[in-house]
Picture 1 (cartoon, rainbow, N blue to C red):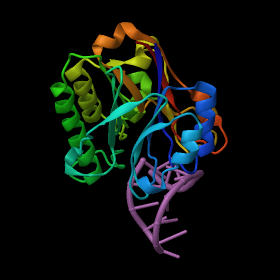
Picture 2 (picture 1 turned 90 degrees about the horizontal axis):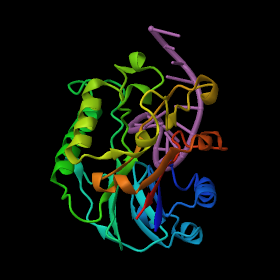
Picture 3 (picture 1 turned 90 degrees about the vertical axis):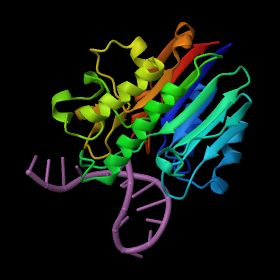
Length: 265
DNA sequence: ATGGTCGGTGTCCGA
């Protein structure tokens, strides 16, 4: 069977419920992983999303901040999520589909403005979170159907994952300490970066454009912060991966756009 | 070098 997975930092699932419907109708992902849902579980729009063709949902939200959710056309069982850095702050939700495939949806802390952990607690949190993800990736078993880890990682790891490598070296999301950690996380499980599996490293590609630009498309100062990674045993099952750039131009868009990957299982 | 915009909340914080 073919399985299409989407990851999207939707920046409020309630504000953008009609854009979620558009993603569901246009791209028909089997599984949609959301970040920054910004809603408590008892206020999650289950009814509307069920009617969009996603009867199976695992949500983990909190008031105002963070929040992750997995929406699926197919049944799954929930996997106990992690509380990284000892915080119960709705940054991880995970499920196992009936074919055994594990899907982990992660929202890595943004890290604030100053890339110095001594001065900026948010940056220290981000680095600590990445350290725990390195350990976690290394501990995962390598047998079984395989795993997918997706989400807003808030790190653009490669030179051409940002509009200007040189100008962003001291900007949170592309500093060497973050990039090294994300690459160590990737190496710890041999995760395959699905978009870069199909898009050459020298080609610029982004998944986020700031709200603050006068014209996001014209200035095109983006970063690739959102990722879909698969375990190495799935690399032969990978059929395509892409970033839905057009979604940044939708009315009342999120600043992030969906990432899509197709697997043949 | 600076400020620019969102969403959720509440008279600002986080992104």
